[in-house]
Image (cartoon, rainbow, N blue to C red; front, side, top):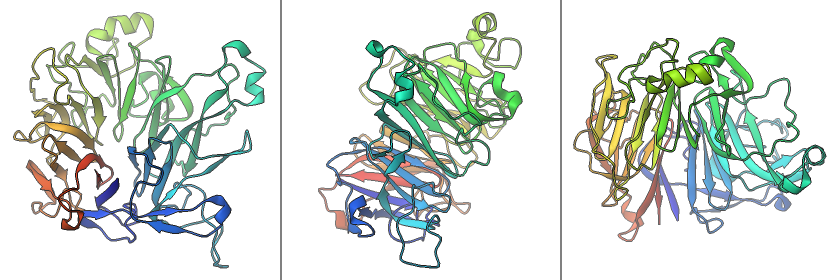
Length: 452
């Protein structure tokens, strides 16, 4: 399995061996090094490092992280603040051993767990803020937590959250009290990050977030703090299973329900849930938390979370978010309870909602970020900061939205956009006719194609 990338690359975040933007898919490079080998590095030309598949591509402002089914994380791009992990040993006496500039090839991440004094190289989740990284691993339970819980009901491992990089707005959650909470052994089942905030979903359906909170992205009850330097509870009126983060908003979903948490000013229309999904048309910031039909129950039980919610009346693969848009994707063959209906928001003239194939999307569309009407039904969908990459049912790859860095291919309009239509992205001829795209990814003006 191989990985190809195109788009913004000023810090080497595409992992293709240099720092120049590219507008055509270029094969990613990998460094393989074991701790015992010191600075000895062997470069290989494919992603089949441990006979596993890439399941998550997380993109920060200038760095990228890959998570595989075996639990390995690979990182590339800017590492001046350690957001790609500990620096490699250097023979340059003038270079600060604690500092490292750009990593131009993907490198496997290995961390030290100071609690158990063991190396951690297998992870469950990964996400990225603009200058930071959040990784979750299942590690051996510490003695302190074992002493405070019922041994008969406590698993031998616990989820631990590792954070690295910079945290100017609290997005790494490093508050004054960073000790583990005795008696807690909930698993983290989902994790997502925006530019300056992160949100995690626990196995009991609870939701916690940290980082920027001023725009209501961590719920109305946490807005007054402006910045949550430690994880805070985000109350939602259903059992949460998944989360997606926009630039300054959050979408929590579970069991067919969802809520969008964000600024009541609704500049780009992300709170303008389409009529086909809304429990009640419109939203406000009144006593009911602006949560449509959930309002009365929230006011009585939870005090309101602030935002607009709805129900997805068909089987879907997930809910994704760009910096200023929301995308609900129903993959072919899943079936639907009722037809998808397109509905345009009146929040602004340049925002709204459209359905392309089996996507319902709403929010910012001044650069063609929402699906064009002629987009064929996608099998897989990847949403970046201001663009989308879709794997179509016939194995072609389509890209649309803001593509100034080449992340939507070489053909754009005078403003760098692919608007009202889509580009078909072809693999290099050297891949051959047997090369098949089986997955796609999208980040901050970066695009990815996973090829067998």
